[in-house]
Length: 480
Image 1 (tube, rainbow, N blue to C red):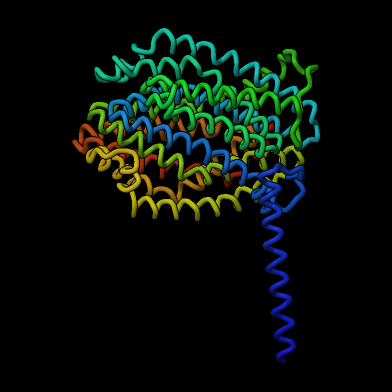
Image 2 (cartoon, rainbow, N blue to C red; image 1 turned 135 degrees about the horizontal axis):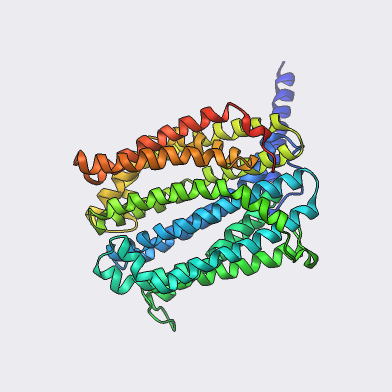
């Protein structure tokens, strides 16, 4: 009997060891980049190989955002408010970049699933052309009208006199932001998220090194204040874009560009733009709704804007694993639909959504217990800490739904059905969230707390509705 127990114990230990070795090998493959066919391997393994580099990519991006606001926070609440007000306009740019990215990821993933790598590469080139053209009007607006744009958002005197150079640099240099988004979307759609991850490590690594040097004038560098933060961002992201282009032409695990692809293909450009309209629309609706929200909050002072801005950066950082898993769903849905495997595409959504929910429930508990401590890392202003802490606590209540909303939305986008989330965002963000925020803040005299609760109500509702609509399954029949 003892011998049988010892044999069973040895077998269990061997199985455990094999399992640990397998997970470790998968982790190394995920970080290095895998040549696996995501339409054939086990769904759990496919999610893991795609999600890990996407999570690490986004964590690095959000780490930069947190580090950036940490250094800017040393310049005072008005400097932080400058970043927040400028970002309301950058959100418009992000909405276009993200909308295009959704289309690019969906189309490239579909071509890869169909085993058409050359067509995927040609699509990638057309997407880069589009990104460059779109960035030009934003650059001109930022260079010429930075003060006017800040004034429109209700900026106070310090922001108008000292902060406008930050807006000028960030909007004027927006091409690097646009290209960084689009080219990484190409890598993700192709199934090369590890390359996208490494690019952001490089770009944001330079950002974080240059930030304190240019803001505070350490060593031989000039003390540029808040303007230095913008310059550091442009340099770091510019280096990231150059790295992306080098790697695209060198070739990844699943996609490579050739110089013969460098010509305009209007039929492909048209397909990208048509598919991206829904994605751009959904993001513009979401981002512009945030502009209106910030405009309402700005009426309560720079401390409210500063507290909300810091809380938002903390949210971006802590939610990155959830966004990484959601982005993995877009690639899996696109490639599996291309391979004519709609049931496998749907199952990948349910598996990812469950783990996303579990993760965000943990984040919500962490927020609830440590909200003011987290905000206090970035500022010693008691009012800013109180406001930011309140925001984190209130939004944490909706996180159990938020995880499913993120995954379901990316499933629509990965399928190329970007129009459905656009319609959903229009109803819940413009017709519900904005009016409700104003009503609760002004009419009910709840001030900024009313805005926070209105956002909670709207985003919980949009999450439940999006998940219900996903179960209807019409996204499986979309062609791109």
